[in-house]
Image (cartoon, helix red, strand yellow):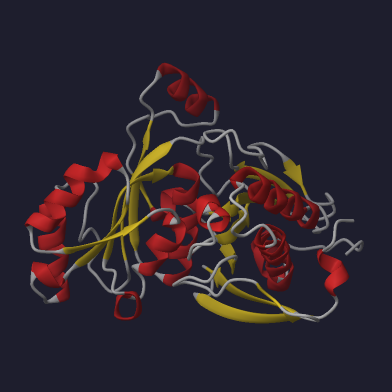
Length: 332
């Protein structure tokens, strides 16, 4: 880990070993999994943050966190602008959600994951920790089949037509929040189905890429902007379409966004605006869920499941880890 890696700019992500990113999310997942079901969201998040930061700082990269976590929830942060890595490698953008679904972990409910993305410097949207309107569908549809500015009814009819089915055969995934009451009613009015989730909209967006397996055709609604960028990074690797618009509804938010380079507060971002260039996304399950199995603790072994996506090659790797040297998960 101490030896510097020399690369050409076009090889930046290619030469950073996939397994190194897997180790980062594995450590965060195991650290937070030890606190599953304890009812303490902040402690679980802090454990994930600390573990992820330690592993990131071992990597041969000159990394900048452009998507951090925690401002909105007053949670412990890998903060926006934080420098990570040992500075002996390429400049890269880092997006992190050390524990997506803190409530899910605290209540030991399905779907909590540790997730991060890495891309060449300057290619991930540096989004403030605000909310974002989002819409996403999986691959195989004409470009622009759905649109963030269209009504839910129009989007469902358009997607049903493109898929060759009736609207009542379309299923949408929406975060279960009071703010979505009208959206949910509009979806159901078309005859389409709604699956509600309490947390975890990175995985929710990814679900649209395999509707035959997940039963989800479209993601709709308002969620966190950082998770939007992470989800877009995954879609870049798997295929699919996504649009998002930051919700900058106060002068303070608009000012903060402007300081981060957001000059048009009403801009509608597509998936390549959110995550350009070569992107790698790694996610490890914390609790068992539809995307990944969670961490399992045995007497002499810890098992993990991780999925890694890479945009340049369209590669998806699933890694089942059996860890017998348990000391590596202890604090340094």
